[in-house]
Image 1 (spheres, rainbow, N blue to C red):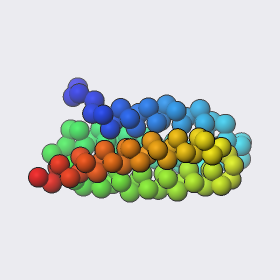
Image 2: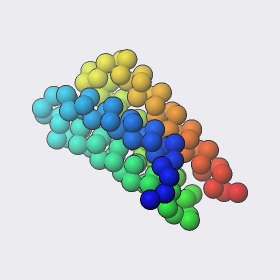
Image 3: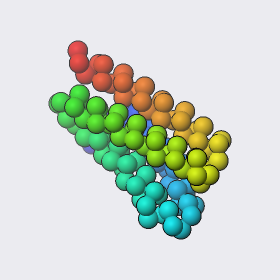
Image 4: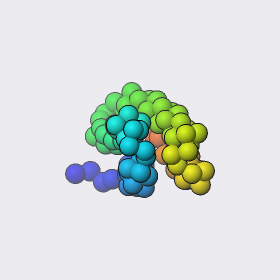
Length: 112
């Protein structure tokens, strides 16, 4: 097993923080919005781990950025629907900005 990169660890911590939040969504949204958000979170984790082991990181990291953008919109919906409070949404935004910056830096370094 390779060393866990800081971006993988940061995203992993975001998943641990988010899972209890989305578990508290209204019952009618648990199978739609909550499942979709969980799937995106896990897809991003899988892609980040793939990038650790891959020689062609660029293509994978671009997919991570796209999924992060989609996740941001999904969480914006949850905030607007009042399934999470503003403080939680702010924490989520700060965390995804940091993950995005880390992915961006990794992407730039993989071009060299």
